[in-house]
Length: 190
Image 1: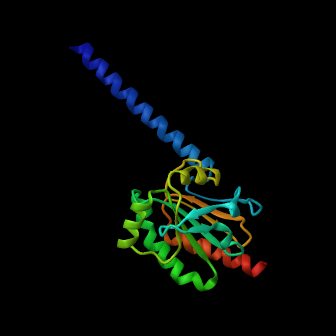
Image 2 (image 1 turned 45 degrees about the horizontal axis):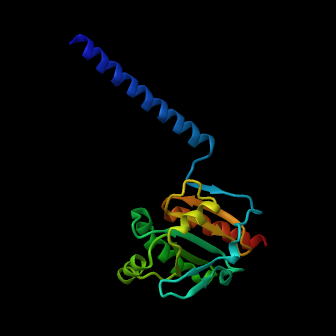
Image 3 (image 1 turned 90 degrees about the vertical axis):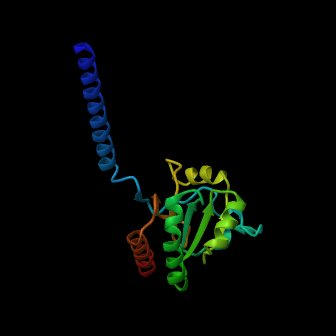
């Protein structure tokens, strides 16, 4: 009986130390890398094959990414089955409506099936363009810096197609305010 209790206590203690070690390692990695959800890139960074991309809209027509050339662009990878993605869409929609006159565009790339996206958009219409990537959107987002392949994932490009910001995870008002300020200050210095 005492041996079983000793084994159980040793197992509990080992589990606690493993959890503590994992927490310390995660904290170290997070602080060493300056966080994992929001990062700036060098102004010379561009996305591979950016302007060559052609997507399909929910209506079935082609949407060429080249049509956004020379315009500040926020690209948001999302899916209908992703709760944080769905939660951030109204914020993105408001941001688009409020800033469209400033020349800022948003493109939502749905990593989803056309039927699911069309059903979602009937219930929750959005003012900014949406295109469907299907599962290949994950591969594309990874090639554009989404190392964890998670959703939502957003990229802010300046009017020249240079990466200004990326974020893995749900955007918030503060992110959008910061990103807008970065675009505005870039316009003033250009």
